[in-house]
Every structure is written in C-alpha cells, then in structure tokens.
Length: 139
Image (cartoon, rainbow, N blue to C red; front, side):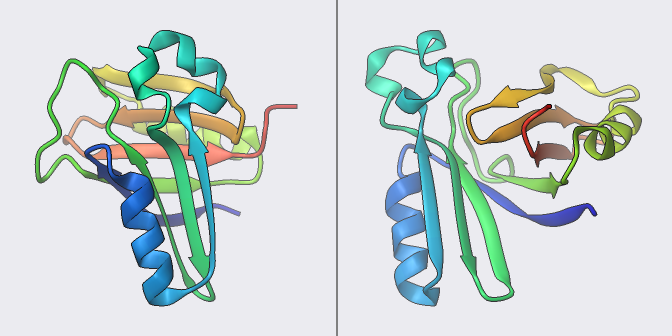
C-alpha cells in the first residue's frame, strides 16, 4: 500500500532541525549520513556529515527530510518541500513513478534504484511538482 508523507529539504542543518522536532513531538528518529552510503564517492568529504535520509515518526505524525546536496542549484524557499511516496514493493512504486515521469524534467530525475535505506528515486513532474519515492530494497 502506498503512503504519502511530507519531505523537507534543509541547508546543511537537517540533523539539528530533526532533533529539534523530535524534542517537540517525541517519537523515533533515524538519521543516515551521506558518508555512510555508497553515494559518498560522488561528493567531497566535507559533505559526508550531511543527512541523506532522516525520518521522524511519532504516533500518527511522520515526516522525512534530507540536506540539500545538489551542487548545481541553491536551496531556496519553495524548493525545500516534496511529496514523498512510500511503498512496500518496487513494482508498486514503479507504476506510479513511470506515470509521473511522463514529460518530467530531466534535470533532477533519478530512476528508482537501491540505496542503503531501500529503493529511492525522484523526479519533477511536468507541472513542476517534486516527487521523491522510497520503498523496500529491490529484491
């Protein structure tokens, strides 16, 4: 079953912000640093402490976040929020991903692929809405 939650992007202070939110609403917080993933080789070492995936869940409240890592664009208000689709299976995500990919912008497009925290992909649709996908690891 697909699920939709907010996804926030931060300017190198994701861990700090998410710890603050945890202190406000409680719950369980998980943080994954860029340096702990295979993607680290695509970035300079000074980025290794940036958060590539954070998730806070407290009862019915859940949201995820990351630090902005795109070196070609500057983070600005209005580009720091995405629709985050979470699914259980790759095939479940792939159906929706492929439909939203029709006429999608290719600049930030990332096909669904495995990451240490599961399947991941992103796109900006033909209307300028940014979508991020996460699911279980591809089997």
